[in-house]
Image (cartoon, rainbow, N blue to C red; front, top):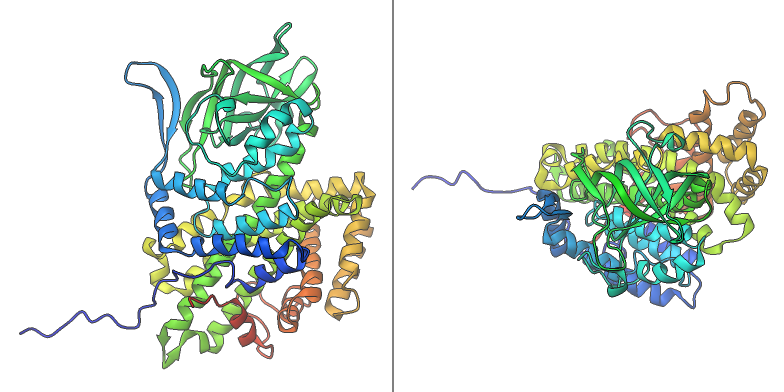
Length: 545
């Protein structure tokens, strides 16, 4: 008999069958911090249910299948009729249905709604990130539609519904709907004021007919879209329903689906309007102002979604290192690997704490918090989304060759990681938005300094960083060319101040030393060796019970 040559040893068990929410100490602490006691038990129960679902083998299988079988465009039926439908794998619908039923499109009308939703979005993103796009767009459409109370009365209950109905039909016959967005065009991209799509008013009907195109239309299978077009009064915001009140299909010509680097489960499309009926939202000529709150809400989802990707990548890296032996013991106990894992954990914790603080500002909805968001949100979107790719790439390396194989799930995370930095305004757009807030809204800087000032005196490196930031702001020479450097400092100072206030001392100490005090390198794993890195790593370790 031949000797056995294929004995499997020293392979890591899959990270499955755990509560993604409850085993994330940073996130669960943030929820307890930002939700008042009377609401907290209900919130913890719903997030626990979602966390257990996200960590289940079933959800992981859905995510794999949704990405292995990306959406397919059907422009015509078998008889030649134009249908413009996007077909998805059943697992996509299961993921989306579970998310909607968990309230991930419902934040604006329930107590602590934004914190509850942001925490759920961060958790469920870890099951599969692609279907977060329609969830985000649907949630974010609410404030734009509220500029027209008549429209909001019809659509808001459907947008915030906990019922998912996938078929396209008259929205009045559905228990819930999804929304998408169409802003950018091929000739302008972010420069939406160069849009050429025309909107011609219909006499006596209150409607418009659109003619033009959209180069990126998010979630083209949705029931309705908010789009920008040039009306007689200037660039305006419009609601484009897929199905008209009489039950007929609106003219919504999907030309092709984008073949993207990642986000494979989700559909992004190029669409044409040719006599497409639309309803004005807000005032003519004020389209950007009308849709800007939708953009802001989706930017928060970019921050929270990136925090979710980071958390999943770090959880996988720590889990792998705890079970994998090398050179005489578990990887997690090796000083150099511990340094890498701790550094990754710091970045993940800082992203989560910042994202949840921004969500809490939405719930507070005071003048002070709105001013704070005006500056903090684009700074966070700039920084957190950019750090995501670096974190996921390093975490993948912690798994070695196993991490480079599709079955590990890490390549999917890596392909997804750059997306949030691009969507809803790339890095330069966010940096310029911060400069715009500084020049036009002085209260924004006051609110930001008030927030970081709550931690002043607790750490000398944070104090020095705040002073350095103020010195940067005092010199306006060449401000645009150095905007990225400035915005990076805004984000790091804010993250440092939040961690000093709320994180364990070993976490705050390591962050301030490496990110604010200059005692860290350009790559992960360069933290000062004298810090309590073992505690930082232990805090980030997920448990499978």
